Image 1 (cartoon, rainbow, N blue to C red):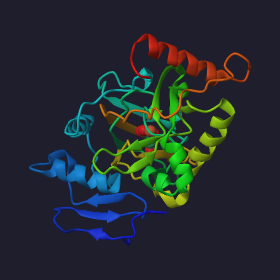
Image 2: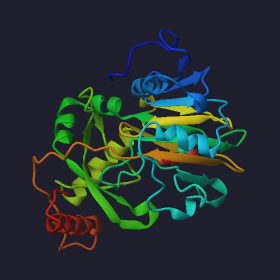
Image 3: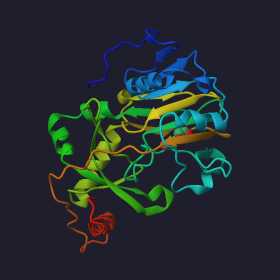
Amino acid sequence: MNISSETLETETADLPWTVKRLAPALGAEVTGIDLATLAGDDIPRLTQLLHKHMVLFFPGQFMSAEDQIGFGRHFGHLEGHPNLKERTPEEHPELFRLAASSGGIADEWHTDLTFLDRPSLMSILNMKTCPAVGGDTMWSNLFAAYEGLSPPLRDLCDGLSALHDAHPHGREDRMTIHPVVRIDPDSGRKALYVSEHFTRRIVEMSAQESDHLLSYLTNWVKQPVFTVRYNWSAGTIGMWDNRFTQHYVLNDFTGERVIERVTVMGDQVNPPPAKYPPFPESAKRSAMSRHDRQLVRHLRVAEEDGGAA
Ligand SMILES: O=C(O)CCC(=O)C(=O)O
Ligand SMILES: [Fe+2]
């Protein structure tokens, strides 16, 4: 179960901040830093730190929306939510605001926006209001999840791709296909890239086989040993690598909880492997094959567009 064997530690060497690891799988808390007044090579250092720990927390920042947006822009192009316009404040189109009082609780495991061809690279969350108890968020390390599979199951996953859609936003028509295994272009490490929230159907399997395998894999990534759980305070900034992690909010609280997120866009996923043809075999025959019909529709549109799905 190839999780880093380093013990929990405080990291100070070569860094002007204090970095405290929160779990063996992923996650670190950074103190002694003011995100609104960074200078010099702070941004490349933070990027490096994020690649190492996958999710970082910065308590006590109390950033304004302008500062949060300015901070996010250091890492790339920001975009508001493509589907949930009602959760985008008019004055700040780059922000995505989730308030529990209007049903905004992300309590299904997911990686943000994987129904897009180029899902987000990084998400930066500002905890505005949080309950005294509960409403923690968990993250899972998708490298560790892949590496924890047996070699034959890894081999199988390596050859597969999956259909993702925006069904949770009422937009099933917004869909794309990604590889089941995403590869980090820098390290070559592989990560399991399917989630219960957005992934519908393995392209190269029958609907029934896909249901079983997807259910297995999307439950596998939730294993506690792959995760970190963070207990928020208002004013904390959380920032995660949205390529190789999933996250989940515990819907166990009463009262208000409000977050504001900026999303760094533009990362290209490695192409799906062309190892097997699509297998939507029951599309014409079964009333239960909703995702088969959806897959056929998507493949047809992709072919008409002349591009790979
Ligand atoms: O509310 C949270 O802790 C996370 C919400 C979420 O899923 C997101 O901002 O992407
Ligand atoms: Fe999310």
